[in-house]
Length: 186
Image 1 (tube, helix red, strand yellow):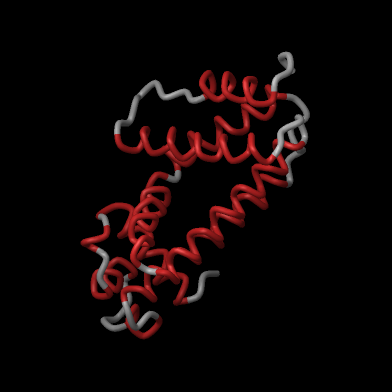
Image 2 (cartoon, rainbow, N blue to C red):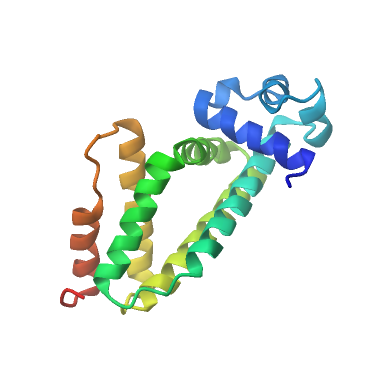
């Protein structure tokens, strides 16, 4: 069961991802959360505190998702790795679209807020570490991991901005992984 603080943050994520940064106000968060006026402000006195709280909540929710995914066997072949990566990208761009849009909005806001920037960086490091674990199973290294994580961001961002109904990142990811890691079809 979510706490009231988590409900406020989940409403803020929904608001940020669906309506953008200009719509993110304490009053609007209260309305989306269905909570009394002043609730968001009681937990997060400033806009910066609210944005930092959003980044931390996104990180916690992402980590829970990665934990669930980590219960699956680590990919042992390039094909298994690419299948998992393609599923991750499609999930981020479609199923989890609002949360992903909120995350990208935070990237831009973080440029002027040091505390938010550190929170965003921490989340990115955790994602990169998780991806490195998966890539290590098929011979990937840190350099390959950084390139693939950057590619995820690019593919997802382009799909969010210009959704393609027949979106399938697998062919591009397969080609990139094979170029970075090498190896025959698994």
